[in-house]
Image: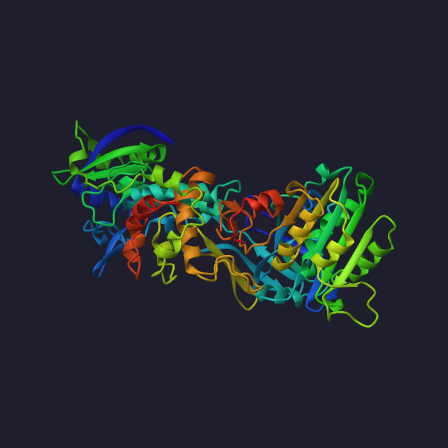
Length: 342
Length: 279
C-alpha cells in the first residue's frame, strides 16, 4: 500500500548499527557484497560485509521472492502410492533487502503481476510478503543503465518500502514509502532522526533517456513478422544469461528430483532463449531458431506483458547487456526498433 | 490437496489400464479422496498435469467426458521421461493430477447443429471427450459424423469405441489408414484424412467441424472444409504446446500474446487465423 512518503534521516553510523540489529533480531539481510571484482547480492552476517561501491549488483534481487531453485512440494513413494507434503509456509524467513537499486525494487511489481495472474502463486507471494525492501537511490550510473527510458528513475520510490538516498554529508535520507516500511520504521525508529527540508534530486545520477517505452509498446504491436528479429539476433548464442540476471524474467521449469523413495518437485529458473524451452516431445519446436526466441524475449517484455498484465517487463537495469557474452545491447536493439519500418 | 499451493496435485488411483495401440495407453483415474472427487468439475476440452512422483509432470487433455462422473481418463503415448514412468504404472498404482485448466469446447452453442469430428492418430483423445459429451446429450444435435485416420490399423486408438460408434445408428463413422497401413481384413478406407474427408463431402451447412491432428493433417484439412462451405467460426481445433505450469506463468506455451493454457487450448479457426505462426 502506498502512503504519503514520510522522510527521516539515517546517519551513516546508524546504518551499520541498524543492519547489525536486524541480524541479531534473526532477520535475514540480503545486500551487496564484494566478491573479487564483482559485487553481488548475498546474505550477510554483519553490516561490515556490505559494500556501497557498486553501480548495480551482478544479479537482480528477484531470488528473494523467486529463488533460482524452489521446492513446490515433497513426496515419499511406497508400494501403496505416494505421500505428498505441502511446503511449510510457516518457516519462510523474514528477509530485508538492503541496497536494492530502484530498478531492482521496481522489478518485483512485474514478477508479482505474473505470479498473481488469475492463479495466485502463494509460493511467490508469501515470500514477497515476508520481504522488506530498503532501496538505495543511484548516485552513479553507467552506459548500460536506461531506467528513465522505461518509466523509472534513479531516485524512484516504486517498489521500495523505504528508500535511502546518500546525501552530501554521508548520511542517508530515508523515505518511508509503504505501510510495510512504516512498520519497519516503527520497530527501528531509534536508529532514525527527523529530517529537515532535504532534497535528494541533486544527489541522483543523471540517466539519459534513450527512447520512449510507450512508443516501443505501440510500435511492437503487429511487429511479429519483421525481419529485424533475425538481424538483431545473429550473434545471440542462446545461453540464457540475460534471463538469469533479469529482475523481471520469471519463466521457469518444473522438475522432480529424488533419492530413493524421497524426493522434491522443484521450480527452476528457465529462459525463453534456450533451444529446449519450447521443444515438444515429438521433435516439433514452435521456436526453432534463435531469432524466434529473441523475438519472444522482446515481445514478451514490451508487448505481451503490457497488453495482458498491464505492466512493462523491463525496468531498465541493463543487466542483460552487461551479462551478454556476445555483447548484445538492449538499448541499441530497442533504439533500432524505433528506427526500422514494420 | 492444498487449496493454497497451486502446484499440489490430487492423488489419483489407476483403476483401469487399456492398451490402445503400440506405446499408447489409457488410464481410468479415481480420486483417492472421495470428497475431492465429488467436488471436482471440468468441462470438455480442458487439460491437466499428470505426474509420477520422481519423474515429473506431463500435460494431456482429459480424454473422458464430463458426463461420465466419478473418474477421469487420460490417453498418452510413451515418449519421454514422464510418459515412460507412467507406462510403468499398473492398475492400483497412484499418480498425481492437477487441473482442470484451459477453456472448453462451446457445446452449448452447438445445439441443433450437425457435428463433424475429424481426427488423426493420437489426436483422437482430446476429441473423444467432446464426442462422448455430445453423444451423451445426443438429442441436442443433428447428424454426428466422425472421420478418424491413423498411420496404420495398429495405430488406431480406442478400437473398442470405434466399433461402438460404427454400430450406433445415430453416428456416421469413417475410419481410414494411410496407404500401406492397412491389414488384409481392413474394411475401412485407405487414404489420408483430408482426401477421405473430401470424398465423403459432408455439407458445411449448419455444421460445426472439430479438427485435431498432426500439423500436416490440419494444414490440408482446413482448405477442404472451406471448399465444403464451412466458415471459420464453425471450425474448432485444440492446440498443444509444451507447458509446465498450466496456468500462464511458466512462459512457454504462448503463441504471440495468446496463452494456449489460459486462452486455449480450444480455438476456432477464426481465432487461429489471427495467431502468428508460432505453434
